[in-house]
Length: 363
Ligand SMILES: C[S@@+](CC[C@H](N)C(=O)[O-])C[C@H]1O[C@@H](n2cnc3c(N)ncnc32)[C@H](O)[C@@H]1O
Image (cartoon, rainbow, N blue to C red; front, side, top):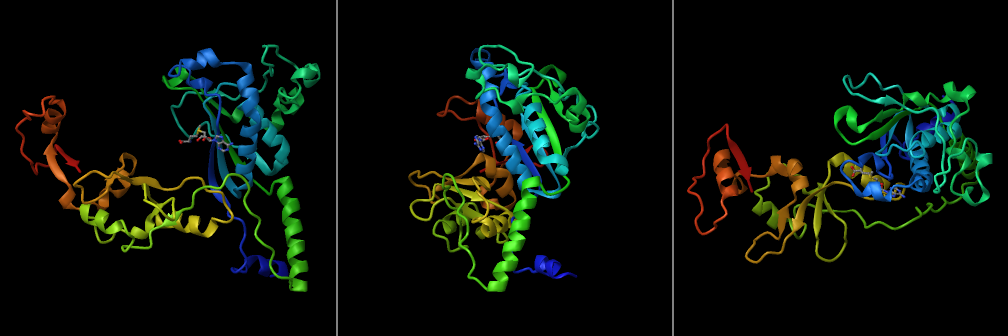
């Protein structure tokens, strides 16, 4: 083992968190959802994709930086526009050299109908003029129609394999349209190599000089609300939730969190203990915008012993911990009767039942 190896393996030295699976479902024009969103017909312009290409590329590039070597990243849009799709993929592949490659996933979902990715397209300006090469773009459009939006030259096509991208069209499966590209990271990105080498050199120099550690770089951008985990069963609002929902003893209240230190807790989110670990150990290194499933929502109704109702989206996660006190078993046909009843002063005559096959839980 070399000296460098032993430094790399030292568990006291932290390294940036990387992921083995990433989904970049990027903001897009959504023009492939035009069957369910009729306003897209009115608002569509060739300018929409041009304006989104930059942010889409930056999200994808950042995703690749956060990807572990050997890891996979899915880039997806609900757009037909090659400027938002293959042009972004091509740009990424060009800039990352052989450190990232497209994966052929055509046989992974047998029966899925799709078209292969496009290998040729013509970028256009907002006035619907299409261009074969950047040199043809008039000066006034050159900041909008960028050189990186053009397709690869015919002789370079095999280098990029854009046909490995997947285009799902609305008539294929009677769905919305979708674009999917799967990437695998095979090595450090060209600019990561430079950063890593520099960091290694800096680490060696610093260790020699025994300098005090540098202050952590502050993450830029908008500051998100904090992730405040419950201290345990003694957290102020927890006893009433526990009692009302008859939560089982093995429910770990420390996996609940809110997004404020002070004031009334509005929404309470539930995470797994692994996600909790990732959040707590990386708040300074990773910009986390949302985490957890919204499970309890404040609902200050009079006469309620617990000021929180269950959230629909959290139900599946908390269900197994809810005790018998809060469950009513009712026959499905009776439930239908209740739902169909439009006269509250004359409710249908039903009885709570413990019948098995047609049982539904009501909270
Ligand atoms: C197509 S949606 C993703 C939906 C998501 N997969 C889901 O199931 O909820 C695109 C997301 O990108 C986010 N977004 C918009 N601009 C962004 C930016 N500059 N950086 C990162 N995310 C952005 C939007 O808020 C939106 O949630």
